[in-house]
Image 1 (tube, helix red, strand yellow):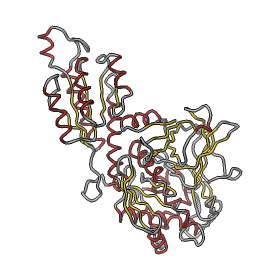
Image 2: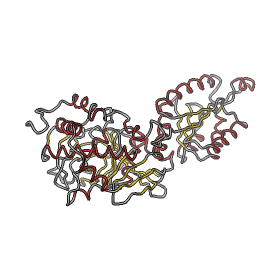
Image 3: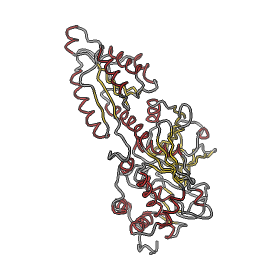
Image 4: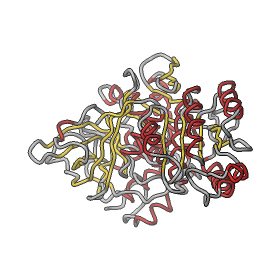
Length: 485
């Protein structure tokens, strides 16, 4: 690469790029969890995020009572209920701190008496975001069942091995609104359940700013009531036109160029303009105190050009953990918001297609996060290209690692009941464009769930790293969504 207008002469090594990104724009890069700050998790009263609240209880009789009765039933005379209670409680306190939520366990275990009814009354009077019920005796499953039957709060039920019998397990295993864990001392699964409850709270509280049209309005999106504030395109157009090539903009443009393994069509001026879009988005997010953004970008790309393709700005936002949805697709943006809340990873919103002869799924779009492993992971390499459909500007062609396991999904929020498309597979190729058509970032997958790739449903699905189809199906069951594959 030759020296250009920004004054550099060689590609920056990958490790140095990661370090340099930490200082972009005088500290705008905040590493893992920046989305949480923009979503308002600092709880300063201005951003609207409330830490998730879980009410919980252990259910078992005192061991002294069982000794007097002379019969223990499951889990048996060797089971130290009080000791296990103290052990789990200590781990729950760590979990509460790590997840930034409140897990309020009853001081004393619930026995099969008035204590269960008092607990039910408290939940009804002040509904929490979720429940955590931990039975330590087979008979006390009836208390769990009463609580579930008489409340309508998403519930995680955790029984260690040797407490519940098969019929009890089967009665809850697929019950809507419940995530049953029957596994030996599996607090990791409990953490998964708590994360799912926390994610729904964040979906409820986060504001998405939508850049589209000529009007300002605010709506709510099912199933959690996520707020959507639409602002006029002109806000973005005017801010972009007013954005000068500040030192911060130039630094980000240099990072784009230095990290790119190649740049093909874009000029350095195109790259500089692409960097401006990131700072315009940040201004709007901060002004609206929003945790995510989506934009109907296509009108501004057509004549007369109102702004450059915003795809590099979207890449940087997603790299920071800020969901950014293309073409004002609300369900795709909600999906990326959910992926971020559950897994702290960005989603690759894409157009779907298939290779009918190789039986492979094909996804493509002109923007994608480079830090697909999460904000604290190294970026994937990318090539700088122009926008495939518009034929100008600067966008990333991200190169995914072959063999990477992935999940792709989309929330269909307006279905009754709301649905979630759920698929998983493995990356087997990143076909270059050309010779393939479509968009710049392309991915080919071999699928897990379907024998025929043409069976994939939906448009603008969102792909992310890791095999998490089971996690998403559990989330759907816990929150009364219909999982579809």
